Length: 622
Image (cartoon, rainbow, N blue to C red):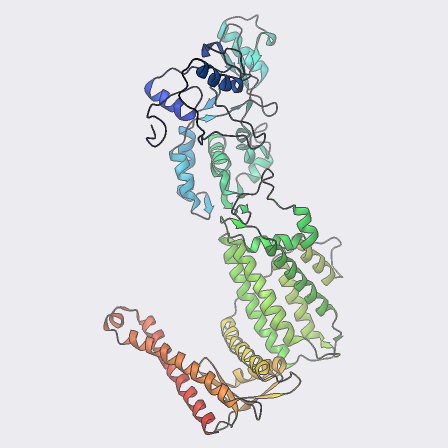
């Protein structure tokens, strides 16, 4: 037990005033001599300085040793002295009589259900923390010297000893029986002044919530117990979660809840847990005033994967506020359109509605899966991307009418329905803005006072061609991105139409491409010529080459340099694929599906390289 780097090597052991020393005393049967009175002065057991305050004695000892010629030297050193975080005074360990609860049986009945996943932890990594606590449990000190709380129902007898009773009457009856004195009254008994540990009251929460202590198996208890989910922090796995599980099996014979979801702990930028004493916790009301309640919620939840701590930064809340603005602006745009009841959907609107139905269906399916796994931040990220990238940046761009023109009623109804679905998906994360906009979206609600929180989440049947629609549209989106880059690089204004040439392989894909690039890029899709036009820019999407005739707008040398750089990259990529396929060990050991994928990579790379070489040669001739 002696640290040879510290002191003389002699060990002073004070079992009554140090936790480690107490354990040594227990091991070696040393006496525990308590030299402190309850008021912090020295007791008769000290022998000297009796009645003086402990702090005064510590100073006086040094003076007395020096006066007696017994003091060799004084020096400052670092000591591990505990201080109260509330009052900043020294914590003095002191032996006292306390009430304990035996835990071996309770730990045993609470361990197996969690290890067997009868009660599921999310994330599951906390099962190991739980198991460590349960397998190394000690008896629980349940008494506290507080002025509030549930008072311990123990009553001391006049001539020594005690009884424990649920009520004073029961305690009196037990006392009369134990002493054999039928004349005892409550005035003769003294109830223990201590209160129960707060967690001792809290471990009954799932039961006491439905008044199951005072009225066992009442109607509410039978209906609601066990509950479904507990949401809490990982720092109280043992203090609260484990003890609720113990109490549930001990008093009700079954689990208190089925799932436990552990949130992360919000910390400051230095990784410190937020607390009032450190002053590192922001005022939530000020955050809400600055960023909005939903902005704060959404920003925090995006950065809060289950069980992982969050390093708080106001930037998170700012991101949430910006998303709220995005939702609000989309609503204002939609509600500002004039509707033509006799109009017909445009080609771009038809394509957009088919595509977004598929995207929405996939997102709903993904969110259902994430919710079932309690991956809430990932579910929020899925609907965030759906709204920002797919709905706002693409879908609304395709369906919105030409400036100053009305939108047809068929398309408008679909837009409203899609916005309604998005509000419902967002509502669990952002309840305030979604409620406000939903109420204004449906001004003719069939039930007065109806709320978005009481309607069901949207459901879209999974169509066989959902993924085909999404994949085809992804190609069109990549084409749009390339065309927009060309416009920016060549300083071609949006009002000036451009051409896009490609081989017409699949008429359905061409129709989709014409609709999307026509609306979003002011581009006309044409059949590619046999010979590439001079001064043209080409780009690849997948293995398909797209050509944009540029006339006098092209910098031939810059375009050749760009394509040669891309060619070098693709040749390096092909070399890596060929190296794999020429490795006999890889070919003989890899699954057929993996080999097919590598062969497809080879064919795609060879096709792209061939097209790039042709394009470079054509530009050099020009």
